[in-house]
Length: 425
Image (cartoon, rainbow, N blue to C red):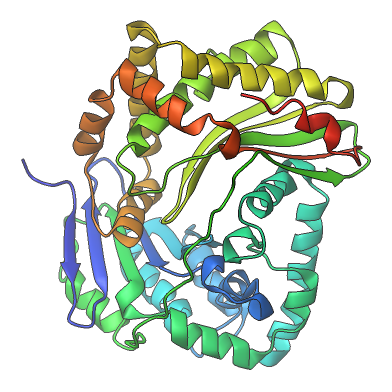
């Protein structure tokens, strides 16, 4: 069977993944580089995200934001950038007849950004307000506190945005050094997805547009350290009408043999309005409005958590219900009907998510960057289908243990002892 994508590696290590899509007129160009906040040191915490901002402030060819953005705005293109702990990405989505503009634009910001000192100083105000926004948004900030609880004072536990103090100390030389040491042909993936079948000489185009990419081998990151031996609790005091919490366990990394089993367990707990957590917390007890059950996998680590906002007076009841759902899936084997439902939910949502060219580009690029391999949908679905009810219970018994439990919350509480007594599983 023909693969739905093609991969090519240039002599300098730069990788190209192309994904033809027949039922669209759009094309997405995504440049994904293997660096993020986990590659930082304490003194430059936040520079990965800050550099992403600076890439959109002007190049030698397009010296300011107006000249940089206007060409894509004129054709109705979409564009943006993003930063995570292990990656940073830049993308443009256009009508396929404008593929050359998209390639020129993305390669230009990626290679030729000016990084003016004056614009760096000005952007510090923007970054500071972004940090303030996160701090003032408990529903968002609780996820940062979750990372701090799990990983502490190491890159995995720091804010992707950095702190106001670390941002204020950054200078142009820091950006230049970071760019030279972490942006390289060897850790960069270019993914092009969409209406590309009639585009000629695509490899040659990529070679020409990215001919000046840095070819220095990138620096490695620190491995994440985990040494939890008992339930962990972080209570952040804030006068709020609603307590926001993340309650869950350490899970598996991207390369763990049971990661797909954990995906299905996650779907059973929180995949849709008829899942176990939704039925209990919102349907039966009316405790929450928003609810997320998240299974997250990184290169070194992973976690599964339940994220909710709840009335301050009902926080203990909510924690008890979440914990009871963890116990139930650990202690009682699921039936075949619930297993089938979870598998079909994952497959259906995955298929729907890949309707757009930008999602197709991300699907293949992230696999290639983080795992150094690409699985097709059929291969992934085969792994999903192979999971049994016994697998689910085995994994649940492995992760739902006292020494893996963690609770982070934001609310009008100063004493964490009232919560410690609840964390018994």
